[in-house]
Amino acid sequence: MKAVRVTGYGDVDKLELVDIPVPEPKANEVLVKVKACAINNTEIWMREGAYGSGTKSGWRPEGVQFPRIPGSDITGQVVKVGSAVPQSMAGRDVVLFPFTSSGESGLEHISEDMSFIGSEYDGGYAEYVVWPAELCFDMPLPGYQESAVFSVSGLTAWHMVNQIQVQAGETVVVTGANGGVGSLNVQIASKVCGAKVFAVIGDLAGEEKLKELGATHVVSYHSEHLAEDILNVNGGPVDSVLDVVGDALFDTSLQVLKKGGKFCISGSAGGQQTNLDFRTLYLKHITMYGSVLGTRAEFKEMLGAISEGKLVPVIDKTFPLEQAKEAQVYFKEKGKLGKIVLLP
Image 1 (cartoon, rainbow, N blue to C red):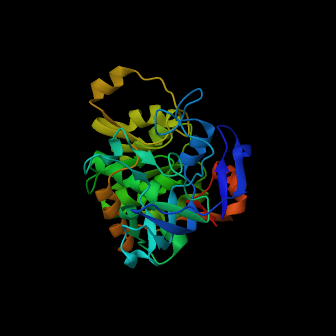
Image 2 (image 1 turned 90 degrees about the vertical axis):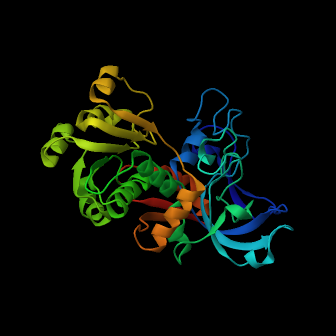
């Protein structure tokens, strides 16, 4: 099969297109013919070594073992089953839950042995992938591409909204609202929870699309008075912030939060380190959450919401597998709206 492997930490020149044997499923696994694999920050940062420092970086302390096939947002068709898997699974169209864990229900995402597909296991930048049968779920939509854009971004967004317990009528600021997680934060907070959403993006050309996704107001981070813009339009401070940007909008986020407000972060595309005056936290009684991925129960809830039409896929562009380098470069460009998808 054709696959794209990462050969070590570095730039896109560390991606190589190779011909390798099709993997064999173990007893409890299935072989999935990959039909679509959406791109996430996770595989970019895995390649760049952004999850650690020095020679070890990844979801696990020991770092990534190279070469590794990246890709975690995977849909496809089960074409072979392991000896302990019912033959009836063959032929099913599935979406893959993106990690393994021995953690108990509800805590599996924070288990010490959480291991991610595309980082600790070979992932979806390939024509075939093996994965535990119990972690393969029926696709929520008829199309492979459309169903592939939710796994990591959607689970992350769903868990973020759950953590801050968004209620109907509350006001929520969503940063990076044009990206994979951000655009889903907009949808979940507004259409599932009934909140009033302020979407923060760069280019206001995407304003109408974000309003279609559920944003009440769309503002640009290029504004020299972003905090004032949000406070003025809202008529005061907001209830919570869902952030994937990090340093670049951190001060603004804390400025616009009400006393007792909640801040949840799940990414740092705009800077991984920041300066914090602790007085802001305790004088405003702000609760802060770090968040990534979520639980199997949340994954099932999310798939149900997608099937019911509460969440819609947003796809910016597709690339053939052979153009994985170009796709990752394009992924990092600003101004996109939605997901980038690789098609083997």
